[in-house]
Amino acid sequence: MSSTTVVGSADAPAAINPRSRVILASLVGTTIEFYDFYVYATAAVLVFPHLFFPVGNDTTALLASFAVFGAAMVARPLGAIFFGHLGDKKGRKITLVGALLTMGIATFLIGALPTFQTAGWLAPFLLVVLRLAQGFALGGEWSGAALVATENAPHGKRAVYGTFPQLGAPIGFIIANGLFLIIAALMPSADPSRPSDAFLAWGWRLPFLFSAVMVIVGLWVRLNLVESAAFAKTVKSGKVQKLPLAAAFRSHWRELVLGTFYMLATYVLFYLMTTFSLSYGRAPATAAVPGLGYDYRTFVLMMIVGVVFFGIFTMASGPWADRWGRRRTLIAITTAIAVFGLLWVPILSAGPAGVMAWLIIGFSLMGLTFGPMGALLPELFPANVRYTGSGISYNVSSILGAAVAPFIAVALWSYGAGSPFWVGVYLSVMSVLTLIALILGKETRDVDINH
Image (cartoon, rainbow, N blue to C red; front, top):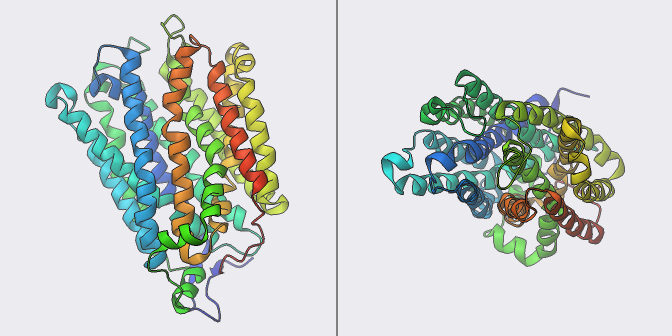
């Protein structure tokens, strides 16, 4: 295997991206984007209910914080349309740089916000605005990173290369939560259900401000990219669409619908394991809506162990999807997710070992279902609407799945009087919808990515 990926052709100007640059450009950017998103998700549980939504009721404050968390998902399809338009008309490189800058600036500014105590309702309003900016940026980030990976992949290795941007999710999680864990350890709290005064005063801001350093690294990598053969061929053949969004809906509406539902179970599992689980794990067993009663440090360490499996199985899923096909692989994995949802209560009833097993199984399934999506969604669309089409499918699914998943989970958790049974059933039902889409869809492993 040579050290570079040749992305030119007889029909397009020669353009060469070293494989190391392809990997870094697709991995570093999504790592930063997911880091920024996880920093907010962690703060939504630990900090924002205390500092931005002090309503006097812990559950109501948490739901308000999660509502802002979900608001970003609504902005993601708008970001997918905006950045998809740029990516399909102007190229992948400049679009990815813009998405990264937008996310980095918004995250940094969250770290500088005044709280409700000092600014009143202006504080949560500004938090919502910046959260929407985060969602808008992430709406354009993922599809661009997936296209950089898959459009530069060697023959027969698209699913393997498609896992590189997906690895940004577990790596970003570990960096974000590891940093919060270190800061919390340096600012210990006597009350396991509440961060220390120092942490609430200024410690929580550090992970947000640190994102500026990561953005600089990501920009340096992406500014050195050249365009892929797929986009260069589209430009040379004069097939660039004036309105990629209209073209995608006119000629590829079926793929848009299927792609959206392909991602549904993945998104629901993703946010149940990363956001709801932190609330459920830390809630006292004696609370009105009881949880597992772990202190923050212990449970986050357990989550990080689970996320290691997330990363391992994300990498493992690529070779499997290239060998057996995307559809066959994902049908098997989605069936396993549906079964997993029905087994939450018996697994969690097994004590600390059961909780650890629940986290490992959930995150392993997450890696297996998330990994192939980096290749599958781009393969659904031709090059001239690929950025727009894959981005809309990915991000509309974020509304149907991720935007409401934490909110629904907390409501079902309360409905079950502390039992997670109905939350698991919710995951299983969403998995069945994804299974139906996969059964109706077609295999994409052998499509021509330069078409």
